[in-house]
Length: 115
Ligand code: 5GP
Ligand code: ZN
Image 1 (tube, protein in one colour):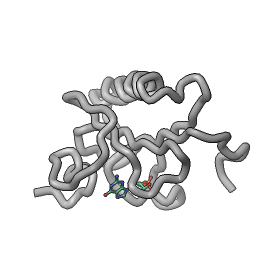
Image 2 (spheres, rainbow, N blue to C red):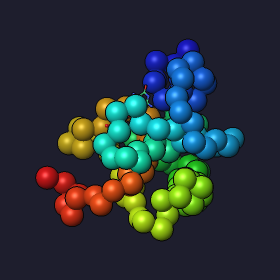
Image 3 (cartoon, rainbow, N blue to C red):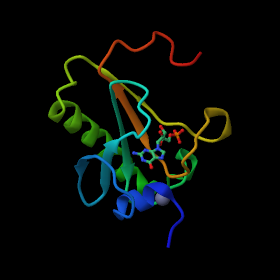
């Protein structure tokens, strides 16, 4: 059994507020939101970081962008805009070692991506 918190969410061993799910991807609300809209989009395949994405995984990554497009329309923040962030490794502060895409919106976000 996996110790990965996102694999546990995918397997429904840990509850989450799911906003989208298909056979390859799950999206749920971040438990500690940094903006009024803060959704995590996660491939069901356990890939640790962006550096571990193989050629055969590239279809999953492009699918994730299509899913983000769908969620933005479904959750009605597409027209106001939003930001997508993937942390990778130590300097980014990546906490969960299962690749994920933060989708942030619901307010005017800061002009700077990093402080
Ligand atoms: P990272 O720093 O790895 O890019 O982002 C990890 C994110 O996962 C953080 O924003 C954190 O709030 C979120 N997170 C960590 N554990 C859980 C959890 O159990 N449930 C949910 N919904 N989000 C979590
Ligand atoms: Zn995992």
